[in-house]
Image (cartoon, rainbow, N blue to C red; front, side):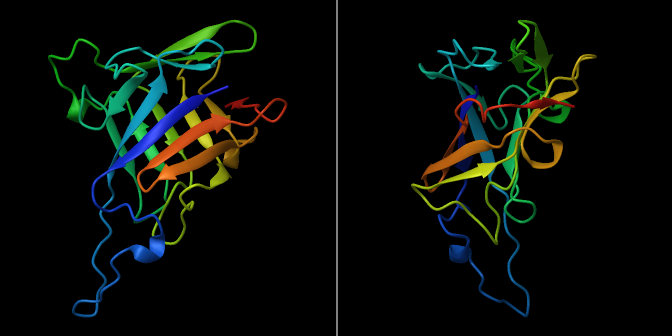
Length: 191
């Protein structure tokens, strides 16, 4: 089971994509600005197969914020609609940050695990200029977590790689919660 919360940062996150500024100026629509994102993973993670590094606590979550300690996170509103987080971006590295690169741990059903330093996470089709999840609603989407290990390059729920999709619940204009479906529809695959 996984549980994370995503928050979009910036003023380009309408609750409905039709609310995007579509004013035509000189024959061109203004470009869509891709907002930054923050990912929060629960500190109370017993029973979860995706665990944070427990750093940058807000009291209940480990916070992976764009621009902090090498984290780069964006929601690609102007393109795929995916939210992509890179936890060890050399170009955004704070060389004085003792937690760089940020980490996450993936636990496997056989009891083994991979501690991933500087990996990536991605939620597919979160929101774009042409689709969104209405506030208060949920949708099934893909979720990908890199591991970079010899055992498993990445763990994938749904979408292109197989496995069961995750539940994305939009709780406000700029916040989504990601959880797995109930067993037995909570299976991920190793790529």
